[in-house]
Amino acid sequence: MTRSILLAAPLDEAVSYLEDFEHTEEWDPGTVRCVRVDEGPLRPGATWHNTSRFRGRTTELSYRLEVREPARLVFVGTNATVTARDEMLFEPASAEETLLRYQASFRFKGLARLATPFLRNECERLADEVAERLPSALAEHSR
Image 1 (spheres, rainbow, N blue to C red):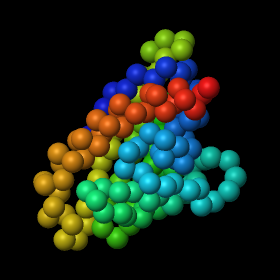
Image 2: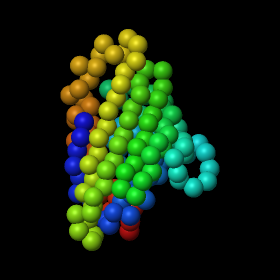
Image 3: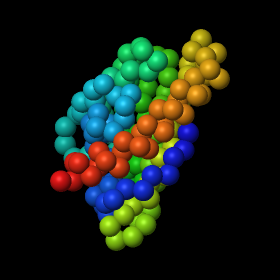
Image 4: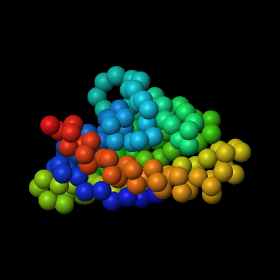
């Protein structure tokens, strides 16, 4: 699923906010809790423990920052049944705005793969909610 989202923040500020995956609690309606596991600067290899709720079920994922570039972030989350990949590409829209291209993908494992076609609509709905909430969460955080 891919969404293009206009953020009312300069590129550096948008990247800085989104590189800390703990902020998913603020903008991802599926995230119940997200806590940084390691310490130190945010760089590739940083890890988080994420608790999400999807279709009424709670699941735990271990997320890792795989790529941290000036205009690109990639996070990969895993557990026994799914690998989630979140890629964020940033482009300045103006001096005070950033266009975010957010792509989320899920690869289900084992028997969970059989449910993939049935989960598409729910995943699309969740992506729409992220696109709706993210701009206001970033604006609130920047105040």
